[in-house]
Amino acid sequence: MRTTGRQVLRRSIAGQRRSVALAALLTAGHQGGEALVPVVIGVVIDQAIANGSVSTLLLWLAVLGVLFAALSTSYRLGARFGERAAERAAHDLRLDLGRRVLHPGGVAESGTLAGELVSIATSDAKRVGTVNGVLPFGVAGLAGLLVSAVALLTMSLPLGLLVLLGTPPMLYLAHLIGKPLERRSEAEQERSAFASGVATDLVAGLRVLKGIGAERAAVDRYRRTSQDSLRATLRAARAQAWHNGALLALTGIFIAVVALVGGNLAAAGDISVGDLVAAVGLAQYLITPFTIFSWVNGELAQGRASATRIADVLDAPPAVGAGDATLPVPAAGHVKLSALSRGALRDVAFEARPGELLGVVVTDPAAATDLLDCLGRAADPAGGSVSVDSVDLSTVDPGRVREVVLVAAHDADLFAGTVADNVTSGPLAAEAMSAAAVDEVASALPDGAATAVTERGRSLSGGQRQRVALARALAADAPVLVLHDPTTAVDTVTEARIAAGLAELRRGRTTILVTTSPALLAAADRVVLLDDGRVAGEGLHAELAGRPDYRAAVLA
Image (tube, rainbow, N blue to C red; front, side):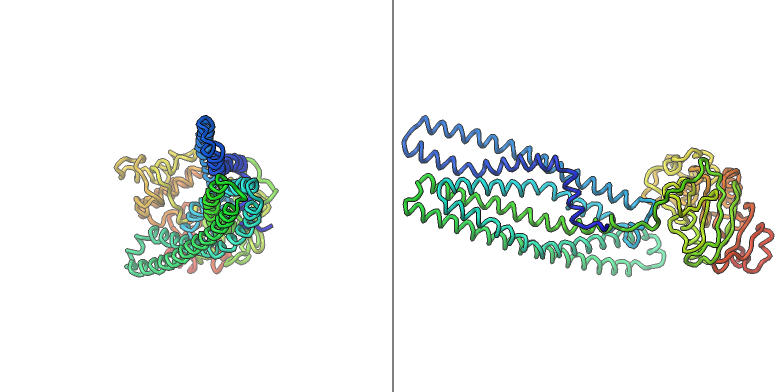
């Protein structure tokens, strides 16, 4: 069933129902007390001042003191519980979004810029979380209105009925007034998130842009995107201003009517002077709950828009489904492709035997991408199968597949931290760093392996990043390791050393090298050639070197 924005909001509120309920109870007490203040003042006028009783005056002043102390305490505690509910709800949403984006089934991040996902997980999650913080105040506003209506009913039936019967239409009109704000808020968030995504992409590719002299085009693109975002923000701001102004005018008219009716009743002698003061005070107090309703309605409108964007990410169907089959433990690592077809691949059939170092030369980059996706179960084949130890991977949960088959992409990013931090997550960290020639990288850095690495490893050269990423993959010691062009940015001498180190470290473990590197292919036990998406030949590197198609792909 499709996840909707309403469901996201409901789940968010349900997850914090205890804190929201406590906040609502406390803030309702605060607003109820606020409504009682003019009532108590009216009583003071009628029972103390009108009668000239000092003791009665002191008594009611003490009551007012206790009332104000209770107001202060209830507001502070209620606001604290409300803020806790808002922050925890936003945190839970960020966790849900993180789990969905990182889910082995994939797809949540497909077609969405990284910056957009960050915006959804921060700004949108905060707006939805804020709904938990403002709802108690909405309940408090209703409590204040109810207390006001009861107080007015005890003074005068017409005044009480006016408030009780006039409030529902006011709330409905407030809801209608908030609709344009909701629509424009959603557009504002979409434009803002897209601008963040474009900015993130431009910063990530800054070196490339400078290298090809495309700075001006990049700036122009971001300017257009930023201007679109600005226009959407201004439209949302205008909608917010219209929304607040319309509700303020509506509230003012309602309060004026209450004050007018109360004044006429006092003039006719139907209510006392104290009741008139209380009625006028209550009429002025009514500004507070209606201001609260205006604020809550605006936050709800923005929260609903953000919840819809969050629901779109959470509801993204996975690229691959779950499976109930299991892989052997420990896995031997026998990989077999049978009549595999997907994208650029056509009836591909070959196998990597347990412990074998298999080289795969693919003449079409698209076919290489499709092959890697199928091997790591980022996508399922359109036809045929990929199996490990005779178990079809399409029947295995993708999380379990990733535990057995590690696909190290060509463009793997590094994490912020140190060089060692990027490698030491695996059991063979030291050996992996040596095999990938990261020890040479460390020796050239000011603090060796303890040298800090900036985001995505941008402080390192392309070759250094590639070696650290390779060491990280080797350190994991996966039963099946698939490497895609792991040495394209290193020199030939280093590449030869890496080829020897890789073969030594992975002895007894299945390794598939999707590459066109002669040094790596020479170290392979066997090489498979895929041309035009089909298996065109297999054998040793030296044997295949005599083929024109192989030479064109590897030795050209």
